[in-house]
Structures are given as C-alpha cells and as structure tokens.
Image 1 (tube, rainbow, N blue to C red):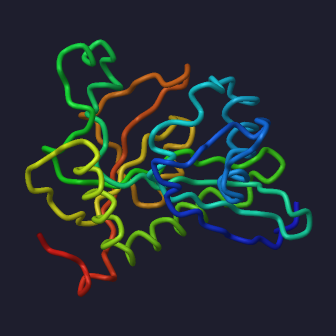
Image 2: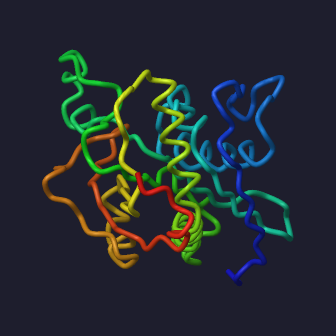
Length: 225
C-alpha cells in the first residue's frame, strides 16, 4: 500500500462529566475525535482481538489525551493512541488481581510519576506503514513539551481522590504495557522491558511493562515542586 496522506488530530481529556459511549450508541455523545478513536479501537480490540466491548471505555478515557490518524482521501480514522497522565494504578492490581481485596489504593502515589501510552491501534489494512511508531513519537513529542499540563492533570486527581500529600512533578518517565508481539517495536523506540514487572494477561493477551525517559523541552515552565 502506498503511504497515505494523513491528518493527525488530538482530543484533550474529555473530563469527568463527559458522556463517553461506544460508537454505535444512540444518541452518540462522544466528542468527534474521541468518536473516531473508538471506531478504530472497536475494530482492533473488540472485533479482531475479541476483547470485551464493555471494558473498552474505562476511567482513563476521561482524563487522557487521545490522538487519531485519519486518511485524508477517505476521511476514515485508521490509527489511535492514548496518553494517560499520572497517577497510575498499583501494578499489583494487574499481576495479582486478588490484591484488590487487600486494601490497595486506587492509585500509586508512592513511586515516581509516569505517563502511560495505551490503546495503540492501527486498522489491519494500514499496517506495515509505521503508523504505530509515528503515533508513539507524536505523543512523546507532545508530552515533552507539555509537562506542565501533565502535572496539572495529576494535581487534579489529588482533588478527585482526596489525596492530601505532596505529589512529585513528572520528570519524563514513560510506561507502556506492551503486548508481547509488539515488544520489539517499543524496543526500537528506546523502551526497555522491566523484568521486575513480570508478565501478565489482559483480555487473554500476554503483556510486559516497558519504560523510557524522555527529555522535557518545556523545562523552564515546568513547576519543580
């Protein structure tokens, strides 16, 4: 397939009062960019990978930035990525789901804050063009230049969750929960597998945790708490 002419659009966090729904819902109350993202996610994660449609929209969708690649010739969304700001849930909730009954907090405030890239998907007919890599690079470039916005999102979560202790500023640490079949792609992008996180199953697909640290180009404006 020839390289298509692409348009990149970004959806800021929809916010806690947004009404996010699956694409076929009536009425459809999704913001337009998020609606395009959901069309891709449903095709890849639900139709192709057989993940649960009921779990496709989660709490992170309301507080995350979303990017969508659209083919300008067809106006169809073809690839997506989501950037989740700090804080992230304790890793034990993934590797040992039973730990949720052991008074673990909803979010991990103890370790260094990290952003997380998730829901990376490319529809089948556009694979092999490097679009997943392009979206990761787009999201990382944006994050490096908008550390202040990421910190503000984390601070907002302290209000929502009632966390009343100081929270460290984000220092460029990035996490991905990579399906094992794309682990090599992330390695080529500079991510390193953290063996201490182990391997775990999400929706029947094996995952590993990988980290990368990126430079912050907005350092002068970053709030060094």
